[in-house]
Image 1 (cartoon, one colour):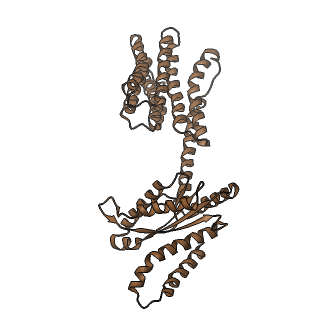
Image 2: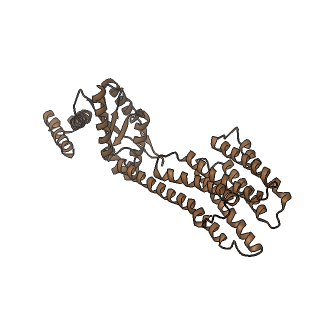
Image 3: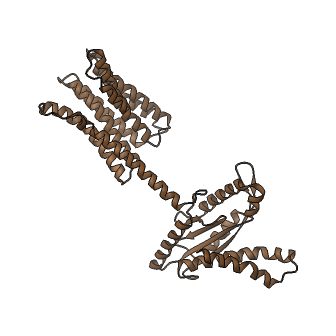
Length: 409
C-alpha cells in the first residue's frame, strides 16, 4: 500500500481528473496501509467482528477521502460520510459486546468518534476545512497504529521503541503540515522530510524482526527441538542458579533423573516416529505434573531431569516420583490409534544433604536412578540367567554406566 501511495503521487500534478484520481488513490492507499497494520497487529484478528471492523473502516475512510478530493466537492455528502466514520466502529463493537469486548476496540471507537465530531465542526466552517478533515483522518489512522502496536507488542527493545516513535511522528506530520501552511507559509519543507517517519517505521520493523530472530535462535540453543523442554545446557544453567539460590536461602533443591524403561523396544517394534510421539507425550505429562517454578529438561535420548525448587524436601520429591511413575503405568495412547507401554526408573538426589555441588548432585541422582532400574530388572535377571551369581548381576551393569555418566560430565 505504501508503494501504491508513492506511485499514485507521481501523477499528482496531472491536470483534470487524472490528478484527482491519483490523489484519491494515493491517500486511500496510505489509509489502507494503516488499517491493514492495525488489523494484523491485534491477536484477535481472526475474529469475524475484527474483519467486519476492518472492512467497514476501510469503506468509511475511503468514501470520505473520495468525496473530499472530488472537484467540485459534493458538500451535501460530506456530512453523512463523516457521521459514518464515528457510527460504523461503534455499531460493530456493540454488535458483539456481550461475546467479545476487548479494551483496545473501545479505544479505537473513541478515536473515531472524536474524529467524526472534529470533521463535522471544521469541514464547512473554515476555508481550509476539507484539508483539515483529510489530515485528521490520516492522523487518526496512524495514531491508532502506534496505539495498536504499543498495546499488542509491549516490549522494551530498540525495534519496538523506534516503531512506536515512528508512528507517533508519522501521525504528527498530519498536524504539523496544516500548521505550517497557516503560520509559516513561506517556509519550504522538502517532501522527503515529511516522508521520513515512513522510513523510521520501516527501520523499526526490520529491527523488530531481527530481535525476534535472535530470540528464536536463543530459544533453539536452550531447548530440545523435539519436546520443547530445556536441553542439557539450559538445564545445567537452571540447576546452577537453583543451587546458588538454595545456598543463600539455606533451603533444599531436589534433582530427579528419569530414565524411560522399554523405550528401545518401542523404537524397534513401532518405529522411531512412534518413539518421538512417546517422548512428546511424556514431556507434556511431566510438565503438567510439576509446578511452573520447577524445571523439566530432556537431558538424553530417553532421559529426563527435573529440578524441584523451593519449597521442597525429600518427602515431596518422593511424592512427585510416585505420581510420575503412576502416570506411566497405563499405556500411552498416541494420535494414530497406537499405544505404547513403557515405565520409568527414577533417581532422587537432594541438595545439600546428598551433595554440595552440581556435578556431584548429578552423579548421585544418576547412580540412584540406575539402582532403581537394576532393582526393577534384578528378579527377572535371576530367573532367566541361572549361571550368573547375584554378585555378578550387581557389578556387571552398574560400574560401566556410572563411569560413562561421570566421564560425560
